Image (cartoon, rainbow, N blue to C red; front, side, top):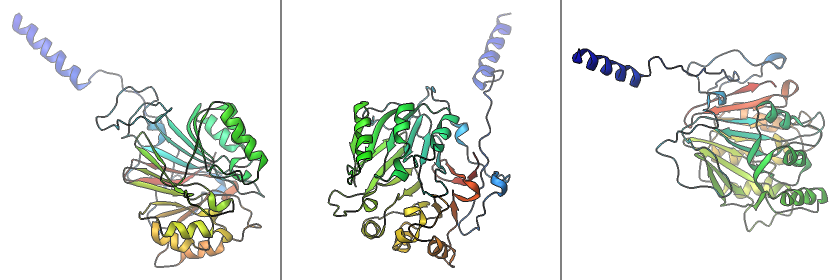
Length: 353
C-alpha cells in the first residue's frame, strides 16, 4: 500500500510539472501584414483592405504580447530605471511600430506609435484636422503614454497634442526647446508643463531605454546653427536588439548634410524626411547610402502641391541595382503601415483602420 501511495504521489508531481491539465490562455490573432524581402516590389492592398497572404515564418503581433499586468521578468532585464516612468519589464517581448495616416487631402502629417508590452511611445500627432491617432490609440485601449515626442513646432505634426494630453496620461514630453515665434506652440508647451508632465528639451546624445528599446536623439545638436523650423526637428534612432528604425521628421538639406557626417550605423527601416517631398530630399541619396535601409517608409498626405513632388525620391528608390522597396501610408484613402519585430526579424505591411 505504501508503494502504491509513493507511485501515485510521484505521478502527480510529474504531470503537474509538465503542465498537463492546466488551462492554456487563448492566443488572439493580430492584424494581417505582409512580409517583404529587400528589392521586392511593394503594392498596397486593393480597396483599402489588408492583404491576405501569411508569411511562412510569422512574427508575433502586438496582440500576442503578454498582458500589461504580467509579473514575470526575464533574467537579462536592465537594472536601469528611467526617471518618472514605471512599467512591467520584459525586454524579450516582440514589439510593433505604426506609421498611422494622419494627413488630409491638403495637409501632410506624422504620427508614429510604438508599443512593447505596456510601454507606449507616440512621436507626433498629426494636424488638428485629423484626429485619427486618438481614434487609433483608443481602439487599442491605450490609456497612457510613456513618452510623447513633439519633433518640432509644425502644426502638421503637433495639431492633436493638446487633445492627447487631455485624454491620455502622459509620463514624459520631449521637444527641441524652440518655439520659432509660434504662439500656439508656446501655449501648447505651457499647457503640458502646467499639467505636471515631466518635460525635457532634448538634443543629440540624449537617450532613454524602455523595456529593451533604446531611443536616441540624433538631431538637433547642441551647437545647431539652423534658424529654420524643419532643420531643427528631432530625429530619433529606435533600436531593439538587432532591429533599428531611423525616424527623420521634417529635416531638410542642412540637417541631412550634418547627419551624413555624423551617423555610423545602418538601420533596416528608414523614414523618408519631409514626407518624401522634393524640397526636403535634396541630400536623401547620401543619407540612404549611410543608413543602407532595407525598407523606406513615406508618411504624410497625398498632396504634392507644396514642397515639390515625390517623383525624384521614388526614382532613386526604383533605380537598379540598389532598389529599395517603400511603403506610403497616404495611398488608398489612408492606411497604417505596421512593423512587427522580435528584435531580429520583422514583418511589414499595410493595415486598414
